Length: 453
Image (cartoon, rainbow, N blue to C red):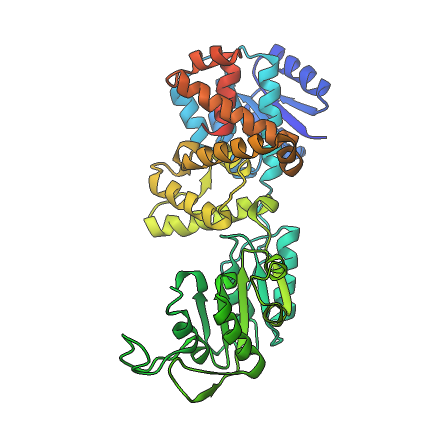
């Protein structure tokens, strides 16, 4: 049962909210002013604070500042009968979750409270980084803890590893971690992205060539496997290799030797192969597009990286990491996202995974002029992409989409799309958009904030 602290100098408002919240299943604690609220915080575990702005003594804005120094994870909802743009901006920049004006409707306060409690659950207090020792890999979810454990267990062996994962999940970072924790960490780690190299020169890049073997070969050149000798070679997007190159790669794995393009000398190597793919290589084998014998030699140890949408509890941790990184890059003092901005990220599926999240935070830090990132500083393309994805999938089979992401997420995505379209049709007039959607202006305003539109 969540505990909510209600702070208001009017007894009638404290009584009204207490009755309402207890009917909703919450435990309530009340205080008549800021000083009393701080005392309640000392003796109670508070999950949400609702406070009036204008009160004698310590007012709501000052109370907000002090609460955030005591426990930054407590969401704070500000309320006032004297709506002021300056107060709203000050409240949001100092970490308030929401700002509502009196008198408010019961449904409005219910929606705000439900969203605030959910946001707290999605944004737990900082914990020790479970990825300590694995540079650049961040996470504490159950899925990532399994990955960390597997890295530790397979690194000391010389077994070839196949890393599966969608684009942007950090496959090269994991490959480097495996190498760095191995017994050959002092030897070379040589990466190559198979899809980035034209088919005409991929053989030369992998195995090297001798001078004069083809037009442009003006010198002898070492290939990837020679450079990685006694160390690790990382082959990203391995599923892009042609059948001819697959055959030659198989020989390297079987015989530990190869010849340069145009050369006659056999070169012996001792290389651990770490490969990665975003394809279903087992299906590629069944369909005859990837050699079965090569697949089993490369995938001695399979390691699967979860997409970011399946480990959303890691998003706040990743956000903190990227905020610190890009605050230093751009010379800014941005250390947090507003509650709304974080909610936008928590409700997004990240088709580009961690790489996409990093790009969003980088742009947000570059665009933001204050010391906290607000929703408008997050790239709008995330909303357009979410709209496109939901439309495409819903058009194909809405039921399948519901089964995949859940009814609540499906409805939220559809609601966001309809609100965005209504705003566009209404020329960005919230009053007109509310009329088109046949909902109250306050309800629309809440939903616009909720989705970061």
